Image 1 (cartoon, one colour):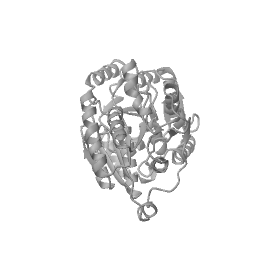
Image 2 (cartoon, helix red, strand yellow):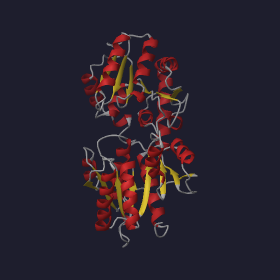
Image 3 (cartoon, one colour):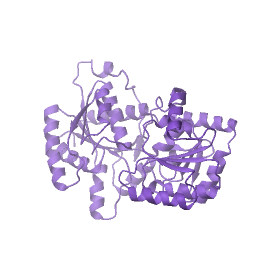
Image 4 (cartoon, one colour):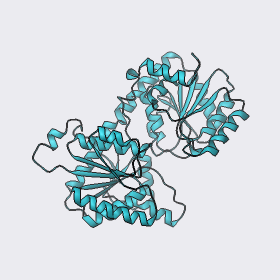
Length: 403
């Protein structure tokens, strides 16, 4: 069964309660493949900074990446380790290295956030007798027995954190999890960063200039990696059905080597006569400003999103959202109040929802914006995610010797 934890003490300033009482500071080691970009990485960094702010020792092991700088600024320590390899030899080698780190640094909890690193962490944890926690971030491909076996490590944590009720249900269907083992902690949005009131006009203008957006023209935006399941092709087909030339559409994201699919999208855009309307732009470093340029934000994923960070970030910025009606979007989007849900892979339904979103008058748009931001601030914040994760750590540390 999944249980939802309520936050106890805030992590900001918690050091006075937990680090100055004379007790030994807990040491938490999170492991993941790399720290470049993505939801797994974002969650690990946010929690690492919260651990440090609580006065604990916060360690993160990965192969590295540009997000390491955030760990340094937040008081956490990064340990460079080749955890991005999935070979059996690498998993055993990494387990031995993690075992040494655990013993040398006095680690109390090892937290696996991805399958390969989690196998190494599980082995190291068993050898050293420390607590093992996992965060289950996705549905994972399970086409055969070996894949299912490989995936199963994410359900072996003493506590298994699901990032949405959708993922909790998936875990319950596939694995024999014990009562109290599974905990739902939704992904968190930094509502101080994703805040319309804190996004300056200068930032918005700079981005509009860089992207050559005409003044006063409605903008539809789909943020997300340029990969087929994110549904860029579905949106292009929907725009063709919209039949409007007085709009712009931005597909914002990196292709990460999928140049063939990017080229296919360009051909589809040209084939629909939308070359002057739809533009693919690389990863954006200022997504709050990007959201402020959008009149409607789309998440058209054809496979279920485990959580759906795009929809939550857009709502935090007060933007109407059109998302596909499956996965985590059913938890983050309130149909008719903060956006629309449409069947996955259905360009006709997406066209209809886009028409409704673009037709909103100023009063309806403002009401939806207020409701959307309130919804995210009450349910999907980084602060709540971190508080609840630290509560999980406290629970396992107070439960006696590791199993």
